[in-house]
Amino acid sequence: VLLRPKRSTLNSRSEVNLEREITFVNSGATWKGVPIMSTNMDTIGNFDMYRSLSKYKMLTCFHKYVPNIPHEFDPNYYIISTGITDRDLERLSDQIEHLRSGGVEPKFICVDVANGYMTKLKDFCLNLRSLYPNVTIIAGNVVTREIVEELILNAKVDVVKVGIGSGSVCTTRLLTGVGMPQLSAVMECSDAAHGVGGMIISDGGICYPGDVSKAFGGGADFVMIGSMLAGHSECPGELIEEEGKKYKLFYGMSSDTAMNKYHGGVASYRSSEGKTVKVPYKGSVENTMNNILGGVRSTCTYVGASRLKDLNKCATFVRVNRQVNTFYK
Ligand code: 5GP
Image (tube, rainbow, N blue to C red; front, side, top):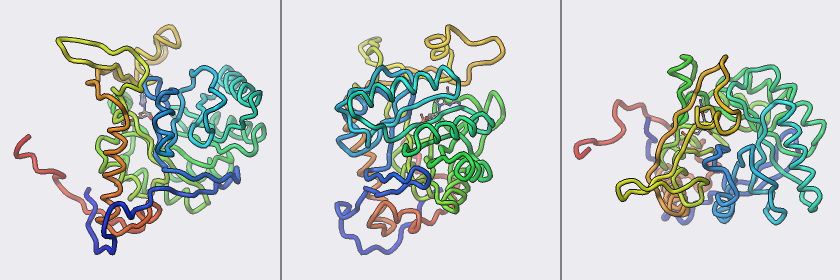
């Protein structure tokens, strides 16, 4: 799809406001910032990424194995991740205790499982809500409306993370045949979430700045990015040099690489659902961020949205059989 341009009274992209002010339905907390975030993969979501993205008032979703978060970090711009096992809850409680010992109250927790349809996710979120009533809870991943409503209304989640099989290093669709087209999922799930006062994050499949605009245009409140942020100096991991070229490693959190690192191998009852790739080194992430923000601002001027919040209302999609001219490959 492409976004149809519309008459606009905006004269410059500098007139576009990319910040949003949000009050969350179940935590009651408020937040102000640019609603774009880095993924909680361990090749992306670390402290150096926070240091760069927070300058843009964007969020960094830390991966669940990060060490103690420095007390001077602003909790408005980071998210603590967790899985749903007892060990995960222990690790999360330790992190929160550490933050509180420095007088810091965490603002966001992301409960992240590959398959958000498991009943255990709902139980885990309800328990979290009773333990931390004022924290904003993000949970996923799912791709259909009924579970979005269930998570917000009955599991007291504030923001639902949407996307199954759309990630760049994801092999779920090939391995299981399961998935939903990302933009369709965003449209369906945002409609469901907004109907009950909640919000969604579009997670996976962002390859170009225009994709961020399309996600917001489709109704996403937040956009989460992995591969576009990979390969930068802020990303954890060694710089690999081969034949004069520099690379960084990027791999799925369900890949052999991640499972060998954290679980001592792939358990016999499961298989790898992620790829491992070498990404050409791209320097500082700030160049990429400027590119993304410039792109989204430009979209807003094309469709007449003076605030990012209005992009959804101003967006009309046109279905195409080709998005770009490939004459010069
Ligand atoms: P990207 O922005 O790279 O297209 O997508 C990033 C998203 O891919 C992550 O936020 C996460 O939801 C998903 N993801 C990360 N690792 C894996 C994996 O190993 N398997 C699958 N199926 N998805 C993954």
